[in-house]
Image 1 (cartoon, rainbow, N blue to C red):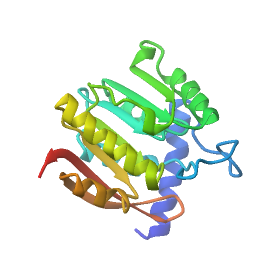
Image 2 (image 1 turned 90 degrees about the vertical axis):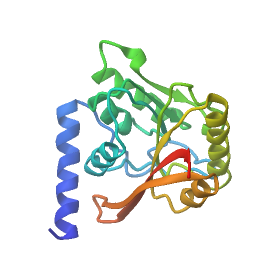
Image 3 (image 1 turned 180 degrees about the vertical axis):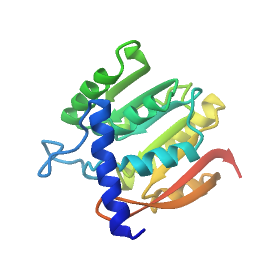
Image 4 (image 1 turned 180 degrees about the horizontal axis):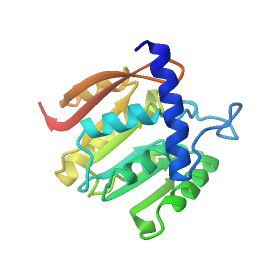
Length: 210
């Protein structure tokens, strides 16, 4: 199938998935954050569900997964993780308008255990990684000093908690050298397509030493 055909199917699948789930994570085209971006922040664009689901499955998501999504936007990753049966999922989002929208979306799909899914409106550099977390997700939410600081905090949490994390990172050109410098293992690599046919390179990493 051509790239155009794959992108078209991806866009159709996004609409179908959201209609079935009864949510809406599609951003406004002009300014989805409704405000100014942080210097290191990348503007919100939701990841295609097809790329997200297949990569999370490659990473081993399941009932024992406690996921943290950095830069959760309107909650697309959290919604998908919930439908894939995770034990818990937390979204970290700097922008208040997106954090509120993600919380509303989660309330639509989780009516039995609201503590299982939650959104924290916070700067990622100030978020303390929960001890039970075992999978982290990034759709290129920030770059530069923010990314370096978050990686350092993950390193510290891994050492303090003696925990092993699986990290799924899309558009990981800047993250990959930081991960390898930390001694983390690269488990898998691949490329998915966005609805506009732009390639989305991804990597799956483990914080266990090489």
